[in-house]
Image (tube, rainbow, N blue to C red; front, side, top):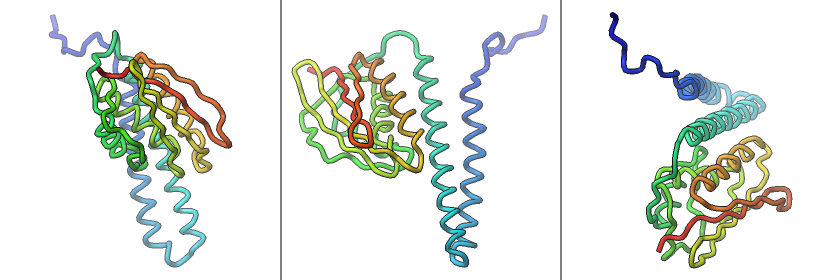
Length: 202
């Protein structure tokens, strides 16, 4: 009788493999676009503009695939999360560093504010929300309460990639629910306001 491998009988991780393939092709496309910008951009300004738009579009597709990967991974997690006390300030700094489009720590007072969360998913939550509108970062407000921390994020419309913010907010809602928090969205000017809570750490 033939010996089976450890993976025999298990379904392949289609989402992981698809993300890997997409990411490889996007990386190649971005490298070639960058080379064309360097070689042709100075000779023809209209070509440079088109190549810059193509680069932004490829970056947006990469962001969407990253968010889809994270959403699939979240949905595959079974059972309640192992929550631990997390300092909000370092959490936001780490999240800003992981933003797909590059981010910055929002100018809010976080001193003495701690939340209960699963560390990696909490970082992913704020990285996703801080990068929800790559072309125009949103604003974040925080209010501490005895049992919860309230957040209000205002996300402007991203004209270059409107689908990016939609998917980011869908992932954010799933991550907040996994942390036993609440989530509500409303229109805010031409963008979206998100009010959500996370459990406060004692």
